Image (cartoon, rainbow, N blue to C red; front, side, top):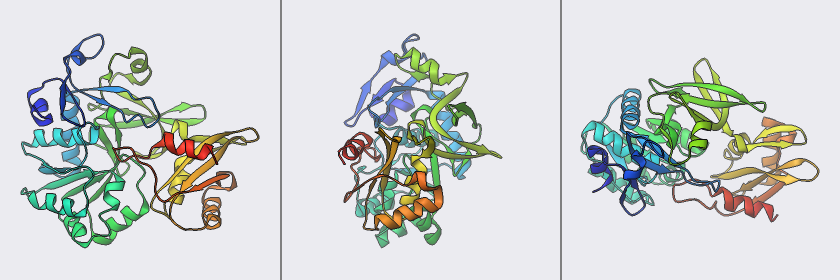
Length: 354
């Protein structure tokens, strides 16, 4: 049985990198949820993976809201592993649409992407990718032509470099920048706008506004972890570990709570510093490290060859002097997890040695 069959039949399962593992235990009313159909392990990029319980109704609600927002449902190119919520969501949307996705290896190159795109035979076509996958296509003419054929291109899971949004405008790509997580069956805010049926508000947390998401696609909780479930889930809402603002219905995500760097009494957003850096380079990583003098010091891993002085000036101009990193490390490329997200643990260890 594959993921498509498991979802279509309602058989409780966990997708792995190599296949589908039956998980009848997730329907246990004490450890899981009676209506559970899938469990997704978080990436563990912080070292603490969780098992998120998804119900059939939550996945269906996510698929329906996505189709309504992007203007249709059709055939998907499956370019992300189904052990991650982004890939599972693509399969769920396909089940809801009654179509079969075209599958390519998540480590695809431009040629494989073009070949996969050419196999799609529906009037409405869509693909979901992480930024690192999308970036590699922008230097390839045939891949750009393939991207132009899509009715919807969803990109999320990590900070989206300006090069992607610039390319979307230049080539007329139907790009949607998505925000979501396993606990919301994937993306539930597109380009800052909550999907139909979704509301986002904030909860004050130590001086920053923590984002809370409410909607029918919110997960049932965490498997066999009632304490963590109670801390995050309540009455169809999920209290995220991200902070941001909601203004006139538009959501702006600044970063994760553990990305707020308190340096010399000033709160600095690691995500905002990273966004400035990514205007100058393909990828960057920013975090706070313990510091005897400052409490925490802003620290950055950078790529490309733009001078440190230019980067410091850009950050100082955009965010103020406290946001300028005190520790810098230049590397050829960032180490990545197999879901396309930066390996935060390794990167932090590298910076700690500087």
